[in-house]
Every structure is written in structure tokens, then in C-alpha cells.
Length: 384
Image 1 (cartoon, rainbow, N blue to C red):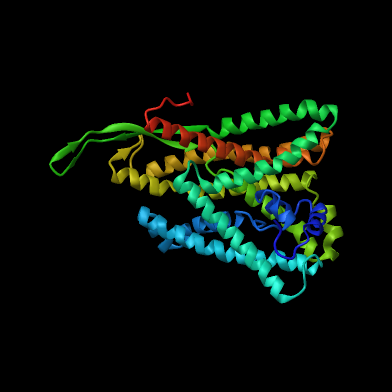
Image 2: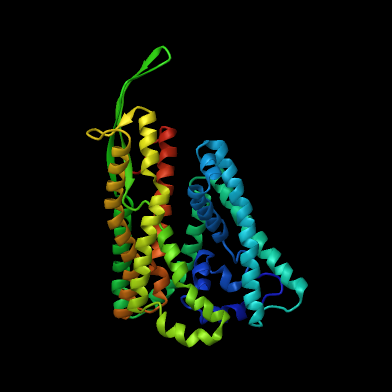
């Protein structure tokens, strides 16, 4: 359902010539709703952006870091800040996109209709946020992730139609390529290094606690899909600038083609850099070392305190390097294959690295939660 007073056919024509821009990136996460300028045109991206911003700010703002360490009450306060930020970002994005399409003559010109469209888009994004949190609270899995999952799956149907109507090579090799990428994503996403942890016996009150051994799992790809989204957003800014400033179109089209080798090389380097950055934000070796020492835990053969932090940092760096290379390959490799093996460009939507990483990651997390729910109710799990 389009927003009030919007001719969705005119908006679709604009998207036909906006390949590689922020428009296409946001359209993917909205399940094609932005191309129709529907009620859910902004999708769930404002909430995701707000969550990432708050997560990054916890490292720089002491008050947020303190809230994060307060447990459930602190996380509830951070979630409240995230909701407020989502409303603000939704309003800003709604004003920006409405102004862009209005300047191109695709939307009605009066101020009242302009504000009605902005309010409608903002309300649609907030409604999606509420639905996502409701799914998380009453359903299985992360509601926000499942909404993004559904949006991407809806967009993959177009790629499936193109494959059915494609040539012989595309019909034969495209499914094999998709299967190979999915297997690689599952293999790396599930890969982890288990750091052994030993706990000493401690006296608490009048009783002695039994020591034990466990492990600290460090994932190969701890950053998830966030570095790919960051890199894709940055690389899509130049084509987006061309939409606002037509005089730059020739230069940008010449130097920022999404299938050119320099473009792909820069994107791969950005993905690797963001992987190291976001992993450092997610995992703090000093904090982990202090937590182990406070609870009487230590790594066998490693002294507690700074030596433990240095060891964890060294192991994490060795894990992050192959993880960053993997993310770069997943994002770049399908584009190269589609360009040089005669596949249609429409297949890129179905084989995009960002799409596959999100779909496979959400599917794996949902299966784990379903498995844990079944085991809690004494049913035999289906994951062996």
C-alpha cells in the first residue's frame, strides 16, 4: 500500500536507474517497499542504525558503558534510548527521501501532503519496530532479525524468476554457486576457537564452591554482517550524491561502477577494516580478563591480568584476519562471477553477499533457539 498521494509507478521508474545507490541498499532491507514508497518504505533500517549507534557509543560514553554493566535494568534503559533514536532517525530519513522525490517531481507539492507522507513513513517504521520487539518477547528468535530475513527472502523471488528464464549456463551453474556460498557461510559462521578456562575453588560465606573447567568461545566472524553493511553504505554514497547533484553523474558513473575491479577492491579493504574495528568494539580483552580474575578463573599456562588480556587479543587478531578476508570474498566474489560468467545482473540480488550472510545467520540463530526450547521441554532436538 503506497503512502498517501504517491504514484508508485513513477517511484519504480526512478529506482530503475539508481543501481548501486543507497536507495537500492535500503530497498533490499525493506523488501522492495521503498521502490513502491509504501507505508513500510523505511523498513527496519532506522532501528538497526540506532542499535549500532548506541552500541558504538557505549565504548565512548562512560554513562552508557555503566548502564551496560548494570544487567537487565541497564539494558532496558539502553533499549529505551534505542527506541527514541529510532523515531528520530525515521523522521529524518522520511524527510530526506520525501524531499528527494519531491524535488524530482514525483510527489505532490503542497506542504500538508509532504508532512502527511513524512508522518506515515515514520509511523510505519515505528510499527515495524514494535512488531519486531513483540516477536522477540512472545515468539522464537530475534524479531528484528526475522523481519529483515523476511524482507530479503521477499526480494529473492525476483532473482529466482530471472534464473528460471535465464540461459543454459545460468540455469546450470547458478544453483551450484549459491549452494557453495551458503556452505562456506555456514562453515565460517559456525567456526570458533575454544579458549579453556579453569576456575579455582573459592570460599563464599561458610561454604566451599567447587572449581571446574569450561571454555570461552571466540568466533571466527564475531562482527557478523555489520562490516559488509557499513562498507556497502559508504560505497553507495557517491552514486547517491549524483542523484542530488546531476553535474557529478558523468564522473561518478565512470569511477564508481559497482562491477569495476577498483570499486570491488576498495569495498573489500573497507570490509576488512570495519571487521577489525567492530570486533574490537564487541570484544574487550581487558574487560574479559578482569571478569575472569574477579570470578577466580584463569587460562591454563597464562598468568591472570594483563598477560591474559594480551593472549586473548593475540588470539582474537589471528581469528579476525581470516574472518575479515572471508567477509570480503563473500561480498566481492559473487559480483565477479556474475560479471565474467555471463549471468544477468538481476541475479546479483539473489546472490548478494549481504543477503546470504543475513539469511543464513538468522536461520542458524533461529534453529538454535528452537533447539533450546525443545530441549527445555524434554523433547528430542532436531540438531545433532
